[in-house]
Amino acid sequence: SSYNSSAGKIGVDPSGNALALWQVWDCNTAYFSYQARFTASTNQWSDAGGVDAGAFTDLAVFPNGDALRFLGANAYRLDPDAGTWSAAVPIPTDGGIPSAYGSNQVGSAAAAWSTSIGAARNVWTTFCR
Image 1 (cartoon, rainbow, N blue to C red):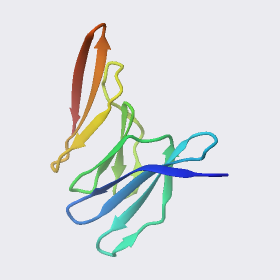
Image 2: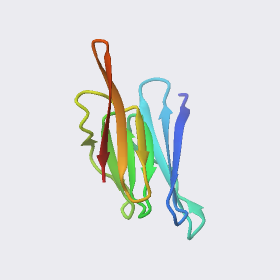
Image 3: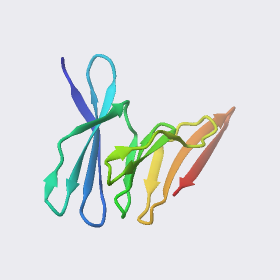
């Protein structure tokens, strides 16, 4: 079996702790997402662990260590203490699929997408905290 890794993202909080997230295509069936965490106080990376089936789009890490992982029109929040991700939280997009994501240092995140109706192209955003 052959595997290809791609689309890595790294987020770092102000304390220097980091979260690395990447996806792996198993060349046969599907994408799988993996993660590893870096703890600044011990200067150590965790072992890589599987997150779930499916590719992700983007990652945001906040000052308190929380993180958001985006997959299409869904967001997942990381519990930094437990190291587990929440169930999918739909991003209200009226059928669009976000293509850009952003975050800031106070814990807010945004997603943006466009839709077309005839010749008109609309750009939409939504914010979450």
